[in-house]
Length: 122
Image 1 (spheres, rainbow, N blue to C red):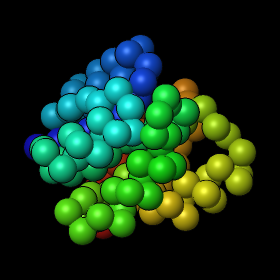
Image 2: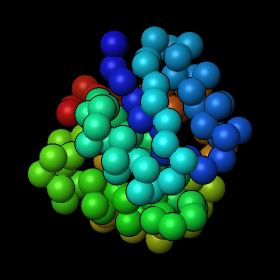
Image 3: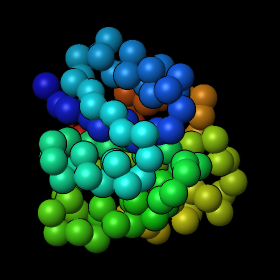
Image 4: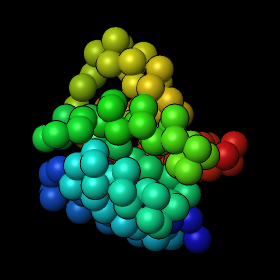
């Protein structure tokens, strides 16, 4: 069973994502901001990270860049899940090392499809 770390400062969003993931057989862990997300990733070594962008302190783009450039966490795939829906945001997120990019609100079908595709290639 894959462990997925949800990094999102919105308790509601984290709860919704957690519900979808657990219903589909995934284990979950959460972090409330980019810095905590990096710490948790080093600590628990999740199979995948769902990363919000707009958060206080270290934002999701910065956290993704740090995770993908750190030898300790670089093999953990990151999918950005955000309300930012501009093509430039998507391109920038992928440039930071994210494997994929989803715009909120995400459908369960779309989320599971992306997660399964990324995990299959990880």
